Amino acid sequence: MPFLGELAALSTAILWSLTSLFFTSASRRIGSYWLNKIRILFAVFLLGGTLLLTTGHLLPPEISSKSYILLILSGIIGLSLGDACLFQAYVLIGPRLSLLIFTVWPIMAAAIAWLFLSEKLGLLAVIGIFITVAGMVWVTVERNTDGNQKSHHERKKMKLGIVLALGGAAGQAIGLVLAKGGMGETLPPLPATFIRMLAAVIAIWLFGIVRGDLREAKAKLSDKRAMLLAFGGAIVGPFLGVWMSLVAVQHTNTGVAAAIMSTVPVLVIPLVIIFYKEKVSMRAMLGAVITAGGVALLFLK
Image (cartoon, rainbow, N blue to C red; front, side, top):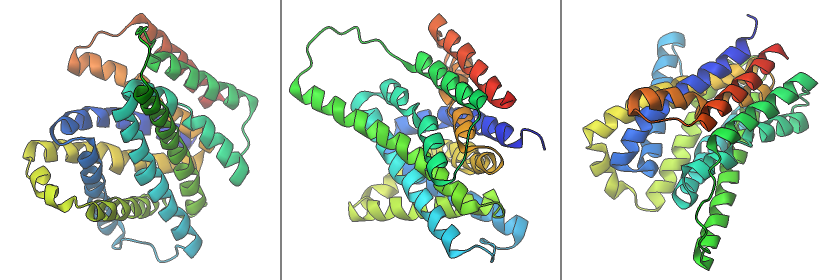
C-alpha cells in the first residue's frame, strides 16, 4: 500500500492528540505519575487480549532472542524511562518549555537510525523533517516576559528540567529505533508492541513497589472517574497509538515517521478549540500551517 508508513504515522499523531484529552482530565484527579503507571497497565491487557483473540497466543513462536532483547530495551528506555523524564520535566519547567525541547526527538531518531540501522534520508525528507520541527517549535515556543532575576534554586531547577526533557526526547528516539531493529522485516507490530509495553509495565511497577507505592494504589484505583478516563486514553494512546507507531517505522524511514508522529502539539489545536473553548493565537495557526507543509513534503519525499 502506498504511503502506508506515513499514513500510520499520521494516524499515530491523531490518536496521541486524542489521548491528551483523556489524560489531561485523568491526571488532574490522580496525578501524572499514577496516570502513567495505570494507563500502561491497561494497555498491556488490551494488547494481550487482542493478541489472544486474533492469534490464539500472546507471542508468536518465531521471535528470536535478539528481537526480545531489543524490544524489551525499547520498552524500558522509550516507554518507561523516557516518559518518566518528560513527565518530571513538566513538573520542573512546565509543559510548554518541555514540549519545545522535546521537539528535537525526530532529529535524534533520524540520526540514531542512520548510525545503527544505516537508514538514509533524501534531501526532500531532510527538508521536510526540519520544516515540521520548525513549525512545532513556532507553536510551542513561549517568550519569557518575566524580567525578574531567577534565584540559584530556580536556575538549578531549570537546568535539571531541560536535561530531563532532553532525556525524554532521547528515550523516545532510542526506543523507536530499538523497536524497529527488534521487529526487523518479519515480526508484526502488534506482538512487538505487547513485548515493549509488558517490559515497561514491569519496570514501572517494580520501581513503584520499591518506593512503597502499593499503599497509595488502592486509593488511586478506587477513583472510578479517573479510571474510566485512563482506560479511554489507554485505548487511543498506548494501545492503538503505540501499535500504529510501530506500523509506521516498519514501513518508512524512522526519521520520517518520527517527524509526522511528533505533530501532536499542532493537531491538539483544533481539539482544545472544540472541547476547551480555548482561543488560539495567530502564531499557533501559522505554526500549524508550517508543520502541515513539512508533513506534505514527507509524503512527497
